[in-house]
Image 1 (tube, helix red, strand yellow):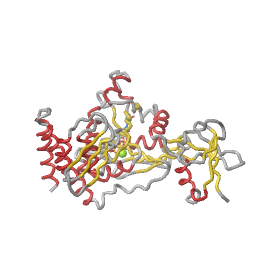
Image 2 (cartoon, rainbow, N blue to C red):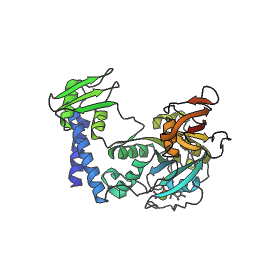
Image 3 (tube, rainbow, N blue to C red):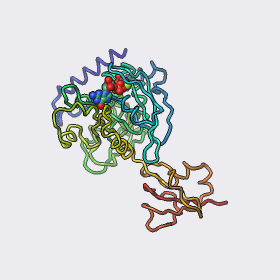
Image 4 (spheres, rainbow, N blue to C red):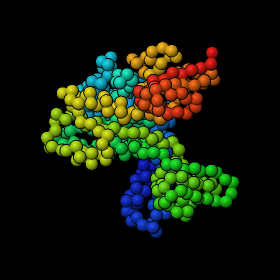
Length: 378
Ligand SMILES: Nc1nc2c(ncn2[C@@H]2O[C@H](COP(=O)(O)OP(=O)(O)OP(=O)(O)O)[C@@H](O)[C@H]2O)c(=O)[nH]1
Ligand SMILES: [Mg+2]
């Protein structure tokens, strides 16, 4: 069953590769893309049935955020986990491939936050369709707050950049979108009237194309509104499919001790496509502290210090929240009864205009380093 679907996907992909892109072929290109997306969804469903729900390795989330390690076998994922965690985790390291056979979680302390790192078995091509425990591995990646992709220098002393693209491709096939935002689209089903299309700003697709694509995706009557400019057909497909995960990627280049060719940072940034990367050697423990801090930064966490009314703030044990979280989120995190009895909040620190600024509204966005006193009715 899966083989047949894969075969079909390959056919469609070859067709896509052969098709010249222009206005006249755009519709057929969109049609092919929609077919591929539907087939891939079938594969994901089949793979998840095989493993009983496809929830991955069932790593219970602990701590303030979760980071999944993904990479080909023997790039040094387990070596790195052992270096970064408190030493209470030992993930087996060996020179042969597929040493790690399940998900191994460990805790990393950084900037007063507890970050759960999850070491995973080496991934292989075809993982998205369930090959080599691919389903379980990708299940873990789906639930993580940050995807840490490990690549390494090979024995010729070169960085295996191709590995990065293979892994990105597998994650993409499994519905995981790295460093992308979900497109701002609003779709309302209707009972008649066909496909209506309205939009904001300049768009790539016209009414006709949107209609064709929506029909292909199973909608005959709906209004579609693009609330941001330049939405691509793939973004529309992703939006309609719905089961996509949007996560940030961070790239770790391990085995720097094997490096031979001198690549500048600009070269590496260009090859990777962004500057979210760091070079390390797990073997020689090079750049490990830098990596720790980068992971904390990439997670977009903030530290909030609580100051009980009329008392000193507790500066040792901050509450860890996400960038963009507001007072309401903090209340919810602290205790479920706070909101019902909420009066106001006083804030000292980056998000306050002056020390001890008073906030009645709970939608005030907190910033890293804020000291906060919440007042409730007694
Ligand atoms: N030269 C060099 N070797 C390293 C480095 N980090 C790890 N290794 C070696 O690479 C091999 C594989 O390391 P692991 O940590 O088991 O790799 P893994 O990615 O967890 O492998 P799987 O679990 O099989 O997917 C071991 O022989 C390590 O000693 C490094 O920085 N430099
Ligand atoms: Mg391993």
